[in-house]
Figure 1 (cartoon, rainbow, N blue to C red):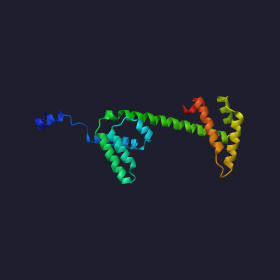
Figure 2: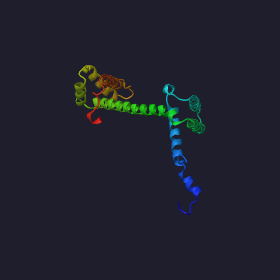
Figure 3: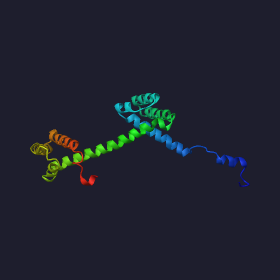
Length: 189
């Protein structure tokens, strides 16, 4: 112990003061982010989550607000209510939201691949079509070619609804559900 430090000061140095102020801010912002994610969830998904009753009540109140400032204050209050609970109370909720986010990303990527394949079928002549027929020999070729022709005509005709364009996507979606790995390009993995 240095002579300039008192005995009481060195005793205080050995005590644990808990998390720093910066860490407390980070944790508060994490809870605020979780609260905003909960507010944006669909009611059916929110009902499946295991949340305390007062948190559910505050989420409902926050959702009903329309004024931006009031909603922001209510969101901060919701986060304050959530901070009253320990981290274990929301661990399952965080895990569920994280899993759903990854699942949504995968589903979105799959939809983009299907859209890309549909666009290739409409713009390219035979390359994309022959690849699709090779991957899915059970596909009705005549029907698919007919849809492609209709989609090309719809594209050239203004004010015509893109029915065949949508039908091609539905057909590709059904094929992808039947064989999930077939429509994934080799560079996407």
